[in-house]
Image 1 (tube, rainbow, N blue to C red):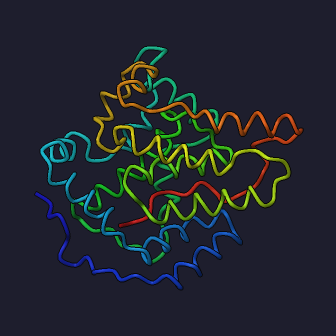
Image 2: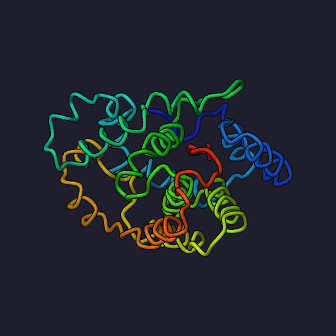
Length: 260
């Protein structure tokens, strides 16, 4: 069995000024995904780590570690996923990924940068699971890949596992929209609603993803207690009333989960 923490995994200390440096670099180049991970290295979070440890050591976590050692190959097997019913989570996921031109393997590649070290321990499995379920979170929550939708997904997932890096990016990006985009679209309210929804719903990382993909999407949302993205939709409607395309308001690129 893999250890919870590899003996070579170094302890991390809080470095807020260095985190600010990486955040500014991300703001200058929204495609520099490595800055998200580097921010995470500077912002260790005891709550997130405790959530990860408790999950990994639980019977559910141990079972999923065996049955789902990696999510990316499962999620990229579109032919297998399309064998489920047309109303399934799997069908909605494949449609989303193909429409957006995405793959789970591509998200894995985007998360890797020179000097990054992965450790053969349970926490690495947990971190990878959070990363690989990012696009599935879009499908389950109803938030699109528009800039506000990305911030809302980060608000939702950070509400589930208390990730500071995702929280900072979500609020900072949303504050930028509120200051820069004309009109009164409820950007901040949309992210606040997403965080509430994330805290109230069953955690995505705790799901048996193979079984979840086979469920009808509306039933899966009800079972998991995922609330409607009402304020997000209202923000889109407000933008369109003003002739603004919600997909062209700018903002940070789609981040992936930083290490804890």
